[in-house]
Length: 149
Image (cartoon, rainbow, N blue to C red; front, side, top):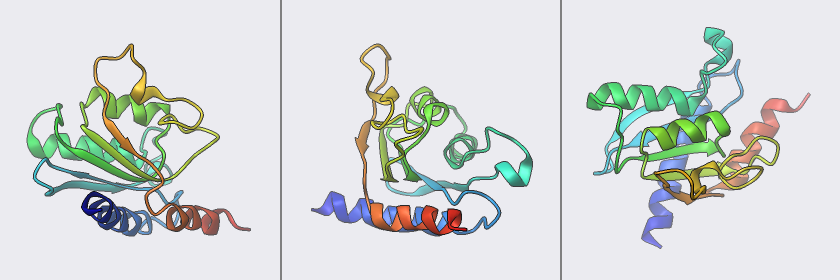
């Protein structure tokens, strides 16, 4: 129960980050250190930067790595409002993220259990813990509102 409450608290923070970029798909990501300290936060910046790799997860990973001074983010937790795609799932595995918490499932491009399951593939050398569907209705509504004509 305590873990669920903590995940929901973190997801509320990620949802707030997602709401800060009105011109891009509202996805927010935060990375917490092993002690629970927020190391980085990011929203999608593809439209802002013209960079197709500027997904919230990738930006948060880059910022967290810069803050801790190394690429290994062992023991860290990534909290993101939408199930990561293959690029982001690969990046979080390579960064050695320990735990992934996400909100809405993404059946079209999700790579943490929906379409693919990159993070649990037994052939890779690092497999984080995964908690999906945290505050899923709120995360899904954010996306539905963005795409509503």
